[in-house]
Image 1 (spheres, helix red, strand yellow):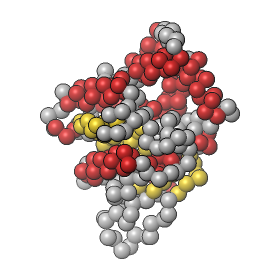
Image 2 (cartoon, rainbow, N blue to C red):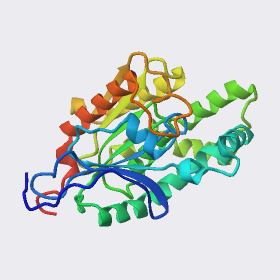
Image 3 (spheres, one colour):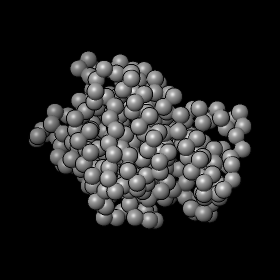
Image 4 (cartoon, helix red, strand yellow):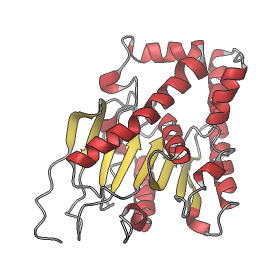
Length: 295
């Protein structure tokens, strides 16, 4: 431990970075040798559906890094006037243009400025790639951040992620009983959010960020297939066996917390398994979240 470093603060909640609510959790002890690595996350629209609830479900306490959980649009402090009912109405009205595209697009667009403010406020490695974690629709945010390259990513993990927009549309079609009216514009959005087809964009760097896909064996079958397809596509692009890994968690359905999942709650047993797996993943790849020797 570096004795010259100041004591670590308590968890920081109830604040915003570039307008984005966040919950920041410090490493258990000062990082030896300087500022600590940084992991940023995006929660589910399902439970846990706020940054503080996601921090309770996946605290990642064993990773010697700052974990900053960002609030998703339309959730928590930024809930729509009509609350969750309005979110459901928009998803039913036009799944792609009134729900998926605006939520994911806003979260991705606001990430770089939020990250800049976080780096100014907390003792994190400023010139290093970050780790990214996403659950469900937050997983689509993490994957799109990885594909677009506006944020340097060192490693990622996605839990029950929305890997293909078309699969999410299919789930909502099953609930509403109505076929989605696809157009050229909505197909273009779906193509942008088909991360199996865009696996080459994730793997374009040298080295490119390793990715852990966590899939509950009780999650929706379509989402489970998409997770497996993405891992297969990435493995076809790397000679390193652990660069893309699929973990299936017994007993895990889609949510990681009890409903409604808006407030921190005791960690569920299946979420604990996920937490331990993601912790081990980032601990193994921690060197990828540190500044390079020439930085």
